[in-house]
Structure formats: structure tokens, C-alpha cells
Amino acid sequence: MQVLQVQLEIRPDPAEVGRARRWARSRLAGSGIGADEPLAETLILLVSELVTNAVVHTGCPAVLRLSLPGGCEAATVRLEVADTSARPPIPRHAEGDETNGRGLELVDGLADRWGWNPEGAGKRIWCEVDRCAPGASTGAAHPGYDDFAYEAV
Image (cartoon, rainbow, N blue to C red; front, side, top):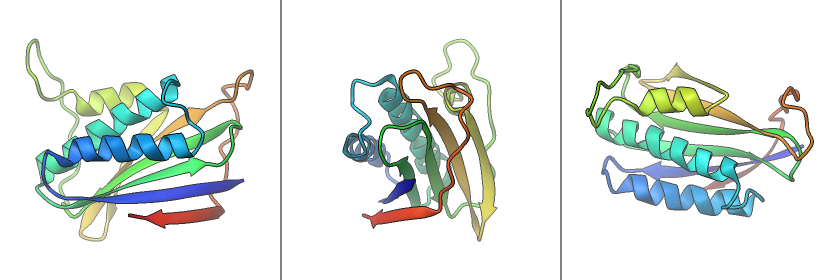
């Protein structure tokens, strides 16, 4: 299976969150994930949360990367945000009317898997969402990411 990997450079500016959502929405549509699919909305929310965390909590530039499976078969969509801050992500629990502190809780609830890895002087936060074709079992094996087509923006 071929996987399309695309990336977008993010400036440390809160306006970048909206730009990242628009960019991701267009890339998802180009890979066959329709805007009306629940998967698209889930992925856009994940993009929003991870890019917001990078922009707000690090003050550093970041790179958003999507790994999109070709075709409509059961597969996994991977989202990554890499930044140059060595500070690890710290999940928080928002209380009551607090407006911050729910981002990683949302990621944990929406993604099938997520985590982070140190990378050079910074880190990479990633999450994966399994995409199942209609009638496909939810226990499908994960595809290998051997065949890449790569697009940088």
C-alpha cells in the first residue's frame, strides 16, 4: 500500500492553528477522506489540539505531518507535530469552567493511539486513528509505511 506523507511548517503564532486546520482538511479531501466523514472531523480536531499545544506551550516553530493511506481500504491515518522544545507534554485535567487543560484529554479520547518521543533538541507528539472501510473489522492489522509519496509545503 502506498502512503502519502505531507507536512506543513507552523510558525509560533496562534493564527497558525486555523491555517493548519484548513491545510489538513484539503489534504484529507485529496486522499479520499470526505469532509462529511466523521473521521475527517476527528482528525481536524486532533490537528487543532496538537498544533495549539505546540504554538501556545512552546513558543517555537513546529512541523505538522500527516501520513495518509492511499485508497479507501482499512488503514491508519497518522498525525505528528514536531517542535524544538525539549519540554515533554504534560496532560492536565481541567476543572469546571476552566478553558484550558483539555487538549491531551481530547487527544486521548479521540485517537486510537497517541504518544510522544524526544527528537533531537525537541520532541514529536503523534496520534493515530484507524480508518476502516465499510464492513471492515475494527481489528484490522496496521499497514506498513514502506511505500511513501512525499509532499512538503
